[in-house]
Image 1 (tube, rainbow, N blue to C red):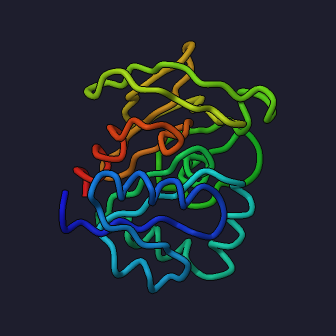
Image 2: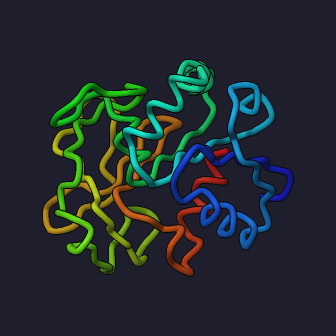
Image 3: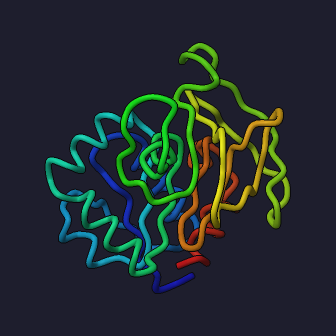
Length: 187
């Protein structure tokens, strides 16, 4: 894992928490705030936060087009919660932002902030981990090359498509580093 440079989109949301997890994995991370920052990294994490705010800021600064370009070149990208929403080709409402994954996402699918919860998840190929769900989305539909890696209560909460990973939940809010290590290995 040493030598990998992982960027964390730092426009809004839980980017510091992802950086903390990456540091515990022994990986160097960078806050991504401009499109040129994307040229300096081996992989990108799009954190949880407010998807509309992050999306609008990506567009304002031209970061959205550069993320799409980097994804098409094969750079690994991982979206958590709001990041999953931003990666989807279809949303239950509103227009999609990056359109990088063959998934349809339902926003705020588990309810409001007060409905947040933690639960144990079983991830295909990785085993058990804790999932923190905060106003979380879930995947309503997958097609093409999108592969389901985890479900909770018959709802899809983790998917992978080629070099792109998306989770409904927040691994950066737990002490379990398995998903961060998994992503770094993709890089």
